[in-house]
Image (cartoon, rainbow, N blue to C red):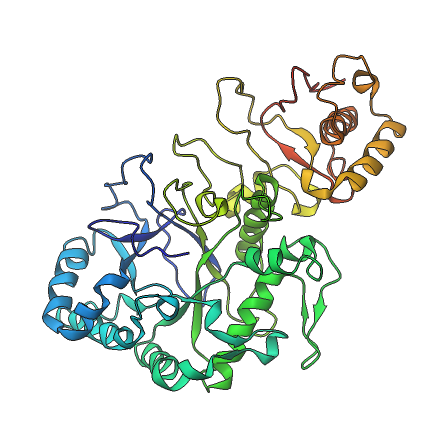
Length: 449
């Protein structure tokens, strides 16, 4: 997931959603959003960052690394144009020098550390090096071992040439390591051994690290601690980390199991709750998580599989793909949903979707739960008081004749009959809440009985 080409001039890689908040490592966890622009149908980039209180990380793209490494005058000009011209009215938190450089097919790895040092030197000339961090996001593919987490190690061919020198530079300049972590990729490659609940931050029995006894309740935390372990193995026990990219796609190709709107909402929503209300990871509990979600919008020109185009929280027309909390206040005010394991999913934009009262919610089936689980939950709901007459053959809501559609009607009936009480839209993870009226054929879902 690269962000090196997201912007043509002022490379705003990330924006904070919490205005007037800067990511201060060592305090509470913080959430940011990547603002990717590899698309031809997006709104114009936000220009009024000056004075907004929004904190920004600026990216120097991979294609400029060789120039930045070769000549400090290049970074002097780049810093003056892209940083000094906006700082301090625009709160620039950091500069990301390159992105996932170790997997760049153009072999830009040798330029990385010299480029980082030249950028830092240029910042020093303008007396802002103490306020703006110099970093470079790395992919989890930089690890040679990641399971169990305690065995985390960097690839041996990268350690001496670039990893150790880069970590030393980050340590000396009081900066932090940026890591792009995507549990989605690990999940779709190992659906036989990794449970969806473990990937979604839902309640699960967890995984115990056999080497140190630490228990992991989420794949995300296990991945992060593998990187911490890799740093520890090289003697960088105190170096901090920022998760520069993570997310879950709302759509994907047929072989991309788990790419769905419901799962994207669950992953990102539960991650936000974890970051803003929890502590650090099992290996470093004292270091709060600081995370950037990928991404603000769906990007229709991203290359690769369908999932690459569908990481956005918003459609290009600025409607939400799904609704999740992004602040502590939002978490406190959201409807209670199965202990936070499910999230509100908005319907795709179309002329048929009606606007509902923000306080109204409906309960629908999670198609990712599988037909057997949905059928069992459907049978339970109908036997526990849901009005299932409309989904009988020949009745008004029989069509479309699918388990998901019928289960959705039954789940919602049960939920509404129980006055939308907390826990009544669960069904063992087979259901979740939405804030717009569900659309299954011409069937109308009731809002109360």
